[in-house]
Amino acid sequence: MRKLLTFWMLALCLSFGATSVALAQDEDTTKKETPAETPAPPAEEEDKAVDDAAAEVKVEDQTFYQAIKQKFIEGGWEFMSTVLICLVLGLAVALERIITLNLATINTKKFTQKIEAALNSGGIDAAKEEAQKTRGPIASIFMQGLIRYPEGIDVVEKSVIAYGSVEMAKLEKGLVWISLFIALAPMLGFMGTVIGMIQAFDAIQAAGDISPSLVAGGIKVALITTVSGLIVAIILQLFYNYLVSKVDSIVSQMEEASISLVDLLVAHKNKA
Image (tube, rainbow, N blue to C red):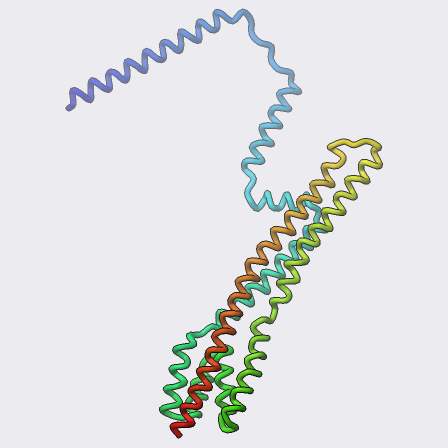
């Protein structure tokens, strides 16, 4: 085994040496065949090539945050700031609603079983104590129905329906602002588009000639603001759809819980 390894190492060394010699001979032959040295490029061309290379390296090394910042500046702070404000406010409202709705969500089936056990063991007062210990709109509806129990089942049903509407309005609080920002962000982007095109045509009119360098700035502002507004609207639309589905789920649980509460109270009244 050692002999075999030694043989392979020797073969690699010989092949490397032969390759080096061949490359050296090729370089000597090339130098001999070259009649004269090529003239060096002018200093201006060298400086330009260095600047282009530096620009390319700068673009490649640019981070995502720096690219966003550059596009924000190029789009014009007057329009991009308004679009950014829509995004920040919309996300703030959406996050607040997500936290609130998640805190309002409970295990309805388990909670109903606790209320039933409390009714069977301690009556209405024990069920009230159990409802007070639980957070969320479903527990509030149960508490409202238990308070109205002495007035009759019909009054309990009407009270539960009315209070359910109040709780649903609380759940939907803030969604109108998110929908406003969803509609407003693209409109602000389109306004930047129109103003950017007006600036481009003003530049053409002032110069008396159509030149790409004249209209490029206005068209860039127009495109960047439009894209920014659409991106903000897409992000907020995703949050809005999630919140609407969450509210619908909680409202559905509230309706089922209300029916269960009425059934429990009817059964408790019959037992009494």
